[in-house]
Image (cartoon, rainbow, N blue to C red; front, side, top):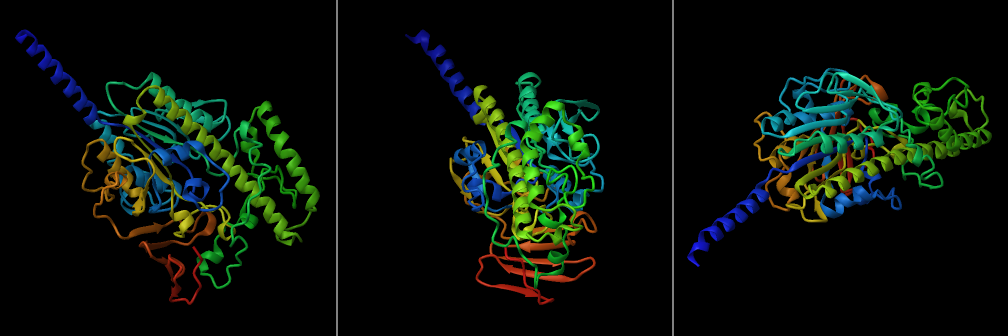
Length: 499
């Protein structure tokens, strides 16, 4: 019997050692970032707008992981938000304060640190930061804003390749293809999986052209806000659905129905094949014809249309339906990637993060777009799945920022954050641990003068109060009690916008 003791001991040690290695194995990282997806458009956030519209794969992340109810950005605009994600530093320190200036890829960003630690990294989809991406073993990116139909992608920062199809069907395919064919399975992977949708101009995939066309949505309570008593910034913005949207890009007309002038839609339509265009016209053609019959063409200004509420209803529904149609394609893509990881047996060892580069207005105050420090655009979705640490159905109430994503990803990889990263890892609070955490957040928007005419401003938010200073060519302060107990204002005597 004694001759069997050594082999049994060795076998037991090997089994224990393997279990220990599996437990301590560095997880894969799948970081999913959409563009302009807002909490109001996710059923799990219970904002009330979309009570009967579900996105099952996003809902799956919430059911099997954690949802962060107080997730915010430091600068609600596309490229600066992505720079904050990569660097873990505020805009004024990473150098990307607006959509105009260049981004310095030479600075320290978390993908470079993951590479140095043995991760294989990939960037697939939209990044909206000029220059050649650094820190990635592989990249397949949309140039600039990219195109929904038959888009070009730039491979590894150099080779431009055109593909036929819809970008929200192509991007998840590229993710799966890279994992299947190019990933070195002796290393963990870290993928930035970035969608174009639901960024403007909301051109739905063919299979979803008719999706929600019969669905009626209620106007937000303050859709017809007349801005009486509001501050200068709220009165002078140019992001109103009825008065500022383009009849081409946004409303999908080839010409302004009231002036007859060609619309800003020639380029997106010109990208389509005959088959794609035919499918498009089958849905949008009759709806547009019906609109033209109801609203007499030839009026010089849309503000002179007698039935302004009817006009608003058409424009609001065209916008909201198209927005949700492209989100539906995003949800399909997430499901495709999750299903593949599950089939490969690696999903549960993958930290899956879902977020957006900022929130967005879906008709609140009659608006679309973002930029303001008001709640719809300051807030952004954040859901995380990692069953090794996160209990299903976890709800996190602490205030987190996109500034925190870099330190968190490094934390999951077992790495210390550099001293110049200003965010904090939310890994522990996602796991349900009670740790000291921030009691306030800071925000700063810089891009004025610029698109949508939103004034420069900065501010501080706590769990109850928000103080905003609009500056540059004005000097106005706004203060809010977010509980609704009272609302007050400073300096100018203006009424604050209801949040």
